[in-house]
Length: 429
Image (cartoon, rainbow, N blue to C red; front, side, top):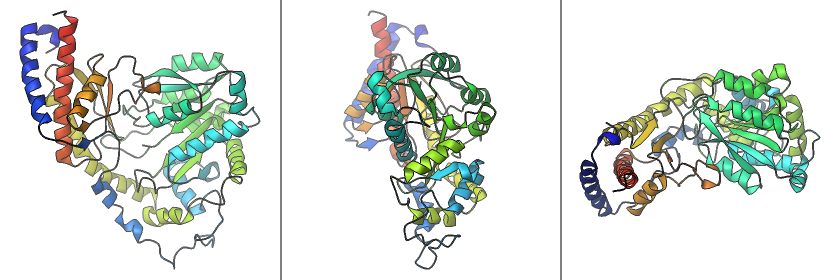
């Protein structure tokens, strides 16, 4: 039943009961945090064998390279081949990086900032002449937004629809404005909504006309194999770009951060021939090699794409109960059907709740006031500004089930209280 069908007297009675429950939580002395999408201990424990797959006798790569030494700047051939087969990307279009996609994305940004893209002026020089802009599908990933903000780009919100970014808006903007230099994209199980880009969206991104010749799509495919329920396969944007000659527009990122160990994974960037050639040239100024021992460790542990997918099924079996429980608690503890809404994703690491309009910050302050950190307010929007103050990202993956259960029950109490107080205020009573 919706709140408009409820009398103000009933709302006030419900509010009194909810506030009593909230005060009971205040007395529990809680100290819980579900604000980041970290793998849980059980998930990390799956990878214990990785500590034992290498010793001093098997550190030699297939081409004879001693992985304990310098060399092989762009990645071990066997590791590149493993990801090439997993993602169906030609090996020659892949460069391996260090431990995280964010590190690679930062590096690529700084290359464009310092050296430019394929002969174009460096972004730092262009920024002295014009304000540069960046398209940000929202809700989105705070680390993406933090990077573009730090480098001085003016970020433009693009609504994230069920099919991906609002492409009518994207196409119109990039066709007219040469100061728009790129767009963030998390195409599979987007952080935080779980959105999966449609084939049409991928095709339109690949073929759209851009006023800026150095416009770039940062394609952060972090959750490409992180299925929980139904398995979705996003259209291959590099293949989609080939007929239009735009493969160098695409910067495709992937990592094992949440497959093996965060901070100790292997990541990659894939792009068109010219961009890969340029990147390899500039890498010579930066490194002798990334961690080849870790690349070799991953190959010996993960072995094949089939093994990776079986491993992901084991991870899903650990994470699904957490997502199921959050969905169940949100359902059972929602007092009225319009006080908040949510979508249960088919994969990824997050559940997004849309609170009653104008209540998100209040809800998060209420939870934190009694010892439960649920999320950073408005972190899923550029500049930490959610114009409707509604979006809350839940991260169910890390805490033990009992802690997650406790945190979610409190969250629902706070969401109900904030909504009812807002509704009573709107009624002017």
